[in-house]
Structure formats: C-alpha cells, structure tokens
Length: 183
Ligand code: FNR
Image (tube, rainbow, N blue to C red; front, side, top):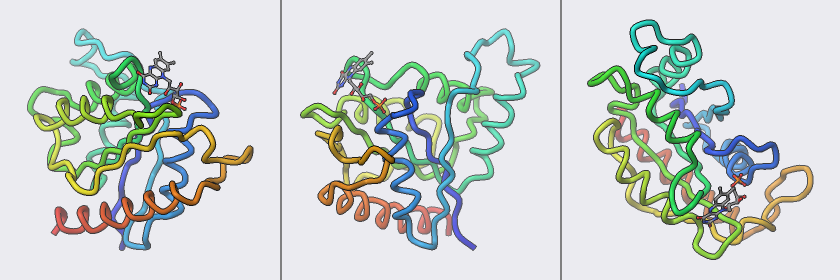
C-alpha cells in the first residue's frame, strides 16, 4: 500500500499557483506515494479559549495529519514569510501542547513565486517553525520555484517543462524520504 502524504497549499485563492503545484505534484508522484491535497478554507482561527472543546474542523484536520505518513507544504511568500492562513493551520495542528499532529511526520517544503526569488524566505521561515513540532524536514533537494506565473495553462495544467522536471525530481526524492522515515 502507498504512503499517504497530506499536501497543504498555503493559499486560499481559486487560481493559486501553490494549489496548482500541489495538484501537479499529486499527478507526478510515484505509485508508492498517495498525495491528498487539502485546502485551508475550512480551518477556523486558532484560539486557546477553544482548546478544551476544539471545533470539529480542527479535530478533522488533526486526524488527517495523524493518519498520514508525511506532510508536504506548498507555500507562496507573503511579505517575506508564509501566509497567515498557513501559520494558522500549523498552529492548529501543533496543539495540544506536546501532542502536535505533525510529530514524527517527514516534512517536505516547496516554495514558489511569480517573482525572481521563488519564495525562498517563506521556505526558510517554515524551516524555523517546524522542527519543534514535526518530524525531520527533507534537506535535499531544495526547491524554490521562481517565475511560476507562466507555468500553467488556463485549465491549470503544468506546461512549463523546466518546472515539471524539478517537481518530478523533488517528488521522487520525497517519496524515498517518506519511505525511509516510515520504516
Ligand atoms: C505577495 N507576493 C509576494 N511575492 C514574493 O515573492 N515575495 C513576497 O514577499 C510577496 N509578498 C506578498 C504579500 C501579499 C499580501 C500578497 C497578496 C502577495 C506575491 C505572491 O507571490 C503572489 O501573489 C502569488 O501568486 C501568491 O501565491 P498563490 O496564491 O498563487 O499560491
């Protein structure tokens, strides 16, 4: 049976490049990996007052993470960091204290931007946020996709060959990483 990976796309907009990359990765993934792309629209704001009786959407998100064999973040860069909705989802998944749903999960990070720097600052911030609450983050290969604005056609299909090539390399490496961490 394949390993299940939760893919978290860090943008809410319909035409999100991050979401399109997540969907492209799901298609490129080898048979050993099953990618489940989750949207963050339904995750309510983290609020410590609600922790004793957590909202159903938090519980469902945490269970999905707990059942997974790994988590892959596809993040845009907002003001040199990750978008607030993504930080919120991480905060929700990280609680209760000491019982993070990311614990032990191998992590992949894919950043992207229509700009020149590929969202590298967002990726670096994720590398700071996650170690205390997750399993190991794959170090190599790194992937910061710049100039993503012309990579997809109007149906959302990935048409840029250079992007397809690095995404394939990345997801093959991540599949091997997930397999190793789950042994
Ligand atoms: C951006 N954008 C952006 N891009 C970048 O490379 N570095 C940055 O710091 C920022 N900052 C930023 C802040 C805010 C509030 C917005 C709305 C946008 C541009 C961003 O990369 C672009 O809008 C992407 O298309 C967003 O990702 P999705 O929605 O396509 O996945």
